[in-house]
Amino acid sequence: MLANYGFTNDAESAARSKGMPGVRVVSTKVPCEGTVIADIEAGIEEAWNDIIIALTKPATAEETSPKVEKTQRPDRVIFKGSLAEVNQFFYRRGWTDGLPIIPPTEEAVTEMLAGTDLPREHLLGKLQSRLGKATIEKIAINAVMAGALPTYLPVLIAGTINLVESEQGFMGYTTFGFSTGSWAPFWVINGPIRNQLNINNSSGAFSPGNIANAAIGRAMGLIIKNIGGVRKGIEDMGVMGNPMKYTMVIAENEEESPWEPLHVEHGYRKEDSTISLSFPQTFLQHYPSGSDAESILQSVIDNITRGMRYTIVFNPQTARNLAREGYTKEKIKKYIAENKLMTATQTKIQSNIIVVPGADIQQSSSETSKTMPLIKDYRFIRVIVGGGPGAFVAHLIGGGPTPGKKEIQKIELPKNWEKLVAKYKNVVPIYAKY
Amino acid sequence: MNSKTENIFEVLSPWADADPVPYRGIGTRITDPAGKKIGLFCNTKRVANPTLKAVESRLKQRYPSATFSWFFNTAPNEAIVAQPRKGEFEDWLKGVDAVIAAYGD
Image (cartoon, rainbow over all chains, first blue to last red; front, top):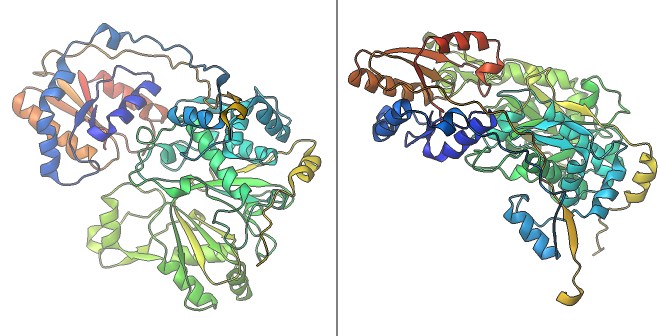
């Protein structure tokens, strides 16, 4: 196996996780994702002796009969110390996102588990890449660390199910976890739970300041890290990284939307609560040149960049303006898909980069002067309503599930839900008046 | 906070249990590529193909009697053994003496 030297750890981890720890990985200086043939050949030349050795050196006993590692089962109680000591211990183990954590004591975890009727040991599945067991207790522990309230636990359980059942391959969780693309999980919450948890869907919906938006995304990030075992620079090979990985959570502003909410589009009842998942890499905002439908949609089209899934977040006022001119969510998606064009030359260049499932790149070189749709299927676009008063529109562009594959999960609530909501409902910031 | 009155926390591990993955060993190595059929396993990453072409070219120069067979995994980020082409891949493996794969990164 030939790998760039920056990917050697990733390659060895992948081989071990697939049960082949003896695979010989030759570290090369072939440039990552490079295209200059001379550089590639130089990288091979420099590694040539190692390549021949890897090909011909007799296999050792360890390589032909690797010893199976013991079950990785750490102690349940892992440490005892002060707040600072706990934080340093967890940070040094690589168990945090770099920010301080709340110590997951037995008492705090027990309180968190009030958010579900499922037993602690209930297994939701195994999370890539190390196939860690996603039990309810481990989810609750990571939730405590993130500063989540017990009422968030049903959301985190549904989010974890979303990850476990995510499609394999380029459009799913595995790509987000293992790609160079720095994809970040983006969670959209729908249904009554939005208001029960005070998830911000209005002014500054993507900004910090609301515990639910902050802690739900953060907890999911810790679950991916500590249950999935996705390590930065080993499995997660994002070149640039992405600040959205700290948290990217929004509730759809269903009350001010002229359209059916996202979960109803997916066949759920309005009274159901759901969490949906995609993996954008880019977050951008733009200011339409006018508030009529043509101006709004032209601005949306002008600001669409290449991706695999697209979520457009219209503020309520802009959504109402579009609806007034007869635009439904579906009509908007179709309009964007039909009118976001790029030249065949651009698509040909793009086709040399990588296979992108959401894009139509089947164009012959003789037709390079033609334009063609960037997005071959309008179902690759999602439209939601969020944000506060004003004109700005937001795009989240990047990865996400193939339409029809797993992207949304119903949130199941415990029997004591109303009581639990009442207990934590007033945990909201109350700003001083000045 | 005074260290004498500082709270002490006994904390639970967030790190998940994981069952050990059954290990398989690598196959017998060839001692000399001369006269052997070398498999070149190529994924979708754009540097994989030119990397393996460079390897093939150099091997051809050094071992003119070696022959080569390519296999392309065209599904990004999907293990070939998890795809419907698993059988095709396994048949291909039986027909080669050694395999060189390019990670593509």
